[in-house]
Length: 135
Image 1: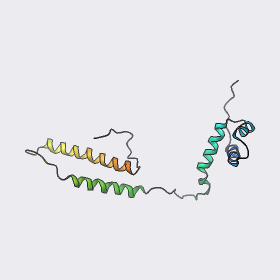
Image 2: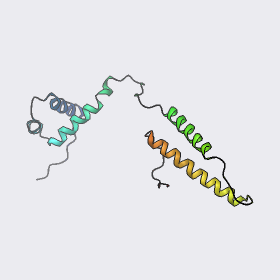
Image 3: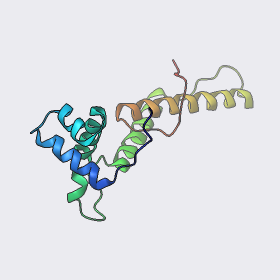
Image 4: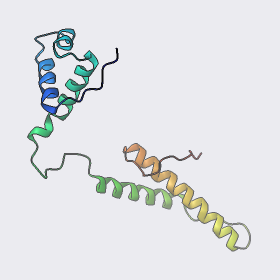
């Protein structure tokens, strides 16, 4: 017979997770005592360990993490350095709108590729969900 889905309160989950953290009883004993699957107890224990820091955080305190603005500034600086290192675009023959347009397209593709690579090296999401590799 199939058992209906049960919704457990946060208090019950905390009680089970704390019992699992104590280590006095085996996972199988806890599962039998609380009538749960051992995987469920393990999951609640993992969640408690991951989110225990939140209990002691002050309201409005932002978690320590990388300074995104400094990283973006560094990426921009590196992109500019790379752009200047390539030098001016060499053209053969008279300059037309088409050659300037192609040069600009080439510049934009290369610049975005270099920025993406720098962002990947610094582990920053560039906002695009997917892109194809160039080169």
